[in-house]
Image (cartoon, rainbow, N blue to C red; front, side):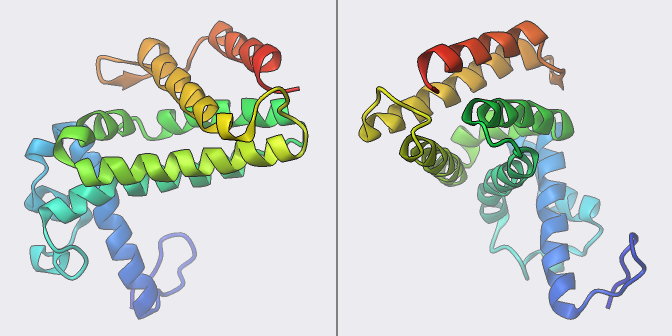
Length: 205
């Protein structure tokens, strides 16, 4: 068994297996963020994760297998991070906390942009699964707000379109204000103000 750095406790075998798999995925995220999918070799990934190449195949069938799981894993990390940042009761404040948390996550994981942008070509299965997860989560969130009376003037079947609109806005704002030359920076306050006015006046009540 392996000791953790944080607590000094030992991993069980099952915990160690989960940790090794996670280490491989996070190594792949970093390698893709630095070199791109095309140059993300198993050798580079295992070297960064500090495991033998043979160990890699205990967790992933092939290079394509892990590449298709990287964006999905990052998306799940993002959803967990956003969920932990949303604490408000008010629907508008909750949406603004989701907005803020999305851009905070990008600052924590700047490699996300390259992983996402290249995935459609190099990891199409993972790209499709990622968006299914993200949109499914957002749709559930807005349906709850609709049911609670926080979104009025829209039919429930229109909420899917609202999700696509809001996700498109965030993606565009990220490319315009948060990401350039491979670097991520905080978005300007006026961008946040504009988003708040949009949702206050057009979506949430």
